[in-house]
Amino acid sequence: MSSVSRELAHLSDEALVALAARSEHSALAELYDRYGRPAYGLALRVVRDESLAEDAVQEAFLTVWRTAARFVPEKGKASTWILTLVHRRAVDVVRREQRRRADSLEQAPEPGGGGADEEAWLRLQRERVQAALKQLPDQQREALELAYYGGFTQSELAERLGQPIGTIKSRMFTGLTRLRELLGDAALETAWTPTT
Amino acid sequence: MDTHDLTAAYALHALDAEEREAYEEHLAQCARCRDELAQLQESAAALAWAVEAPAPPAPLRARILAEATAGRENVVPLPLRARRGWQAAAAVAACTAVGLGIWAATLHNSLGTARAHESALQIAADPASHTVAVQGGHGMVAVARNGVGVLVVDRLPVAPDGKTYEAWVIPRGGKPVRAGTFEGGDGMTMVELQMPVPPGATVAATVERDGGVDAPTTKPFLSAET
Image 1 (cartoon, one colour):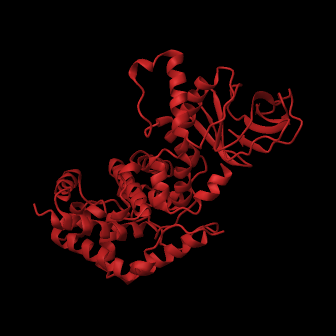
Image 2 (tube, chains in turn brown, purple; image 1 turned 90 degrees about the vertical axis):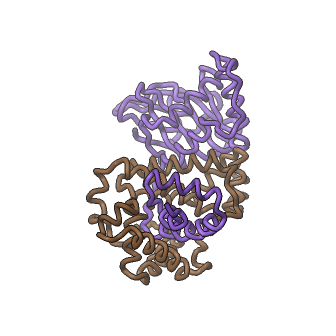
Image 3 (cartoon, chains in turn green, blue; image 1 turned 30 degrees about the horizontal axis):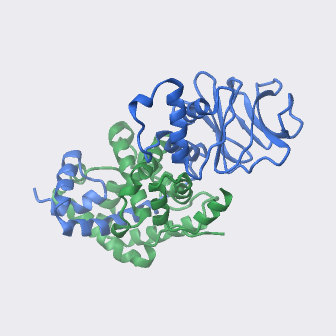
């Protein structure tokens, strides 16, 4: 097993998903070791409760496990797929738990200053994306943040911001497109890289 | 409803259930939206990296892996008539063994491997179980409401020749009580403890001579305070 673990460390995320589809538990373990931490950070940001965040991460990784055979590498990166599943679970949870959400955004911590034990590559990714977000026009950034971290629907956003829904749609679309340009393809390479 | 322009909101999970369903129906027939969605999803996922990422609680990893094993979703389902009594337990174990692939579980329990395997997995995977991370290795101790405990250790090397691992339950303020021996080995080791774990007890493991001993003779290499 230990030799297998070392071999897996050199596999791409997509190869690991293919192995998971063949019931290799060690591949699921390796995917968790790569993305469990950002997944938990994301879920915690959205649901604002450690135990609910754990549930969302657990459900998402079990969905990865159960549906790995349906993952199509040509359509996108495995890391995107995993984080998309985590986000969807977290949003579902936060909508179920309305009471938690009501005051969540005002309490959102300012980005920056991760824990001292945060891995260097995670910190690097965080700084890159935060820098790109800062360059977006305020209204676009606001729409993205409220939708993605707050779990609000576009209709809720329209009401909250007092804007027509078409304006909200357009801010989200332009914001995501612009974010992609700002990050550039290279910076979107958020895939795990070995640190040792 | 014009569904084309819902792509960004869908990528951000900002549609309500009804809109989401309508968009997914549309997506099945619109190649342009599928392409656009793939791009916008990459952007949206980038937002995940902008948040602080504290380390998740250690038992989460073991719980996910235990449940992946217990669920056996990637394994051909058993015929229904096999699901009875000990046959069911044996079939589950056989099935799990297939599902485990290279990730074999090591088990020692007087009830018999098959049954022990199943109940250990259930306890480890049950969210109602109390779980704590072990110190000294990757793993956790899960204790069911009835006090039955499971020690799960990932990547524990095989016990040296002539030696065995022995688990102990140490009640608060009490002496260590034997709770079973195990050998470690490939992948994940899962040990159903043969002594109930009272609240606040410590679960520990030591290296002992083959066959085990009545009281630990070495310092525990793993421990977890429940």
